[in-house]
Length: 142
Image 1 (cartoon, one colour):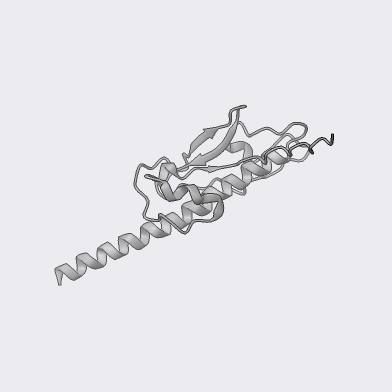
Image 2: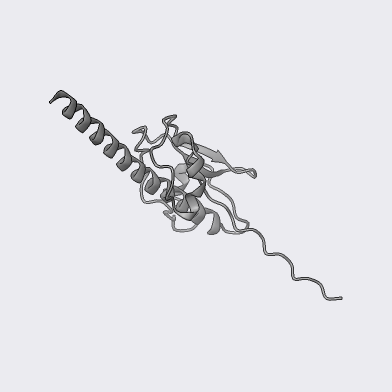
């Protein structure tokens, strides 16, 4: 009976971890979308937010804009202290968990998260906004 209880405990723990991964994918994507909204709706030249709090209340407009409804917690660490990815031109371009635990999920990710298949830890699951590449000029005729 003890072996059965141990096996059940292992299965339940695995299921709980998978649920945390689903929550992490959702929360990380919410931050990625909010960063994209902040960047794309910038008055003038696009800029990244200077802090995650700027996503909650963007005061660059006469009426503040909310790119993110609420601060999401990292379900793996349990905290709201996300790791941030600095954009080369300044500001925050992405977020990631600070957990060094190895993920269970290793395939079947959405297109935007395909790089996660090679991740060794949850910290490697980086939810980053990638601005579209500038359009190439049309070829010159001649």
